[in-house]
Length: 546
Image 1 (cartoon, rainbow, N blue to C red):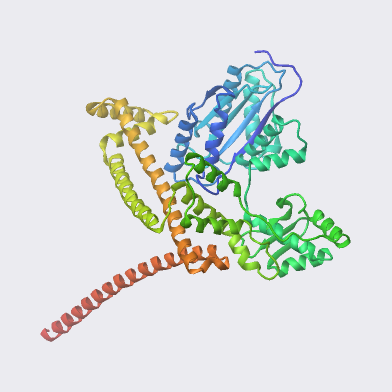
Image 2 (image 1 turned 30 degrees about the horizontal axis):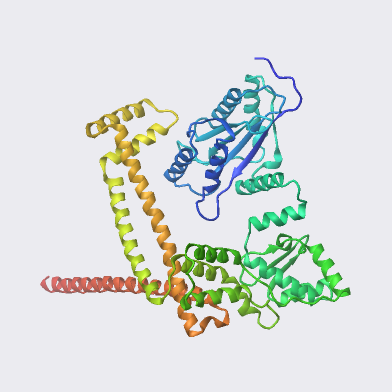
């Protein structure tokens, strides 16, 4: 095959798919597979994990669970692209991806690749699991891995197909996949709105993709207050310290308010809050008197308003009764709470941080149209019955999945079929399993039977998750209603009330466990003491007889 003599070189980007801190730890891996297998972009898909993104993720996830390694790096995402004037077709670049993956991974890791033709240059995405199939070893990509191991492989593969050698784009190393996707979405959004300047574009993007962080709201408020009351930058820092902030002033200004686990760089708070901008604002306030705005609205008010509008659209006669208005007033008063000042800071800060719970409670009441305490109690009772029913169904499904001979045989068969290669012993085992299944029912029917049980199990788990969330909301609503009646949260300590209630439940549970352990230990010591006395009596008797 002739080598290409055009200008430019092929580029490879290496991205690490990091573990997600909340939800599914491997969620980034699933998102990566969904992205590369998008039918609007992908012209050809291949790999030993399968061509369907859900199937490929299921295979990789099952492998992680088998080796009990769900955390750490979820996987890796490599991108190989060639210049627009490089005469490479889809099949050739797919062969490059296949050979590159096989030589790099040695058949030990599940991978899926997809050739994209949506740009002016053809490129291929390769996503592979971080856990080995045969021994569960995590894929390791140390510093300098490109020069020592990956580049020689890529050069050999490119030479085989007469293509230019690959060049590593170091700017993309170890990028979190979620951040990368968000950056791509912002770029696409900018392309779709070419008439907007940078400030308008940023404002429109933030309004359509709101990021609500009440801690950031409060920190911005405190900075604004400190700027208004500080004649110099050093006085500004002292004022923040008087508000119980931990201040770290270096290249960036980092602030950690009391009650927050981590510090935050002020540059992350938006325009006007970087270190230089704060200095400029202090100087401006010193020479230009500014009237302080006493009020500040918090939270996402539009969501609740939209929910009320939809409810009224469905039923023009619908209106909130007094029970629901109790929750609505607390939520609305919190949204329009007076800006924290020097005297009443602690109470107002606590209630602003509880705004998310208040909003969840109100939205649940409106969606479910719960209109009285009695109805709330009935929902709690119905919820308990529903959880028992789902728990019973889940137990039944698990029994069939893990004790049914057909399911065990199909499970073992799937593990063998999913392997990239089989030893003679494993091939013999696969043949034997097929024969045993055929004695009872056709193999495909057995596979469908087990898949249906897996779907039932997933459905039950999903229902249990939803029911737990409903139980949490109903419990919080009940607590809030009790505290509204007693006036306990007029001080703005609803979040503290919830925390104390949760801690009380934990303490009661721990106390019950401790009492149970003490009783068990006491019974054991009594038994030991009785046995000891019996032994002592026997020893004395034996001595007298002798």
